Length: 99
Image 1 (tube, one colour):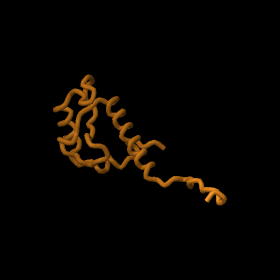
Image 2 (cartoon, one colour):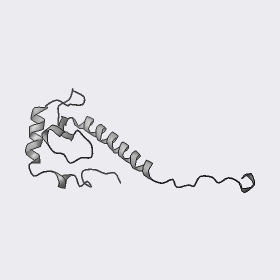
Image 3 (tube, one colour):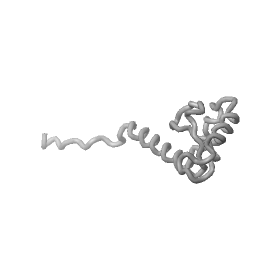
Image 4 (tube, helix red, strand yellow):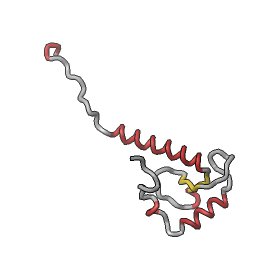
């Protein structure tokens, strides 16, 4: 099941004045900070997987750029988590006659 806004706990961790901060960031950065072409419609946390909601830690970006950035960050997170998992198969044992 893919993780999305409906299954995420992120919304519950947003500060009470999130609407005000969102409007402020979008007013300060009306053009996407990633592509520099489209209008900013989404407020993105610059550092992934954090709950730092300070204005300096946020950036305005367009929806397509935000989706791509989020997908890259999620893939990197999954790859890092998979690398920490133990291998499922044991290394092959040497034949007793070859020891």
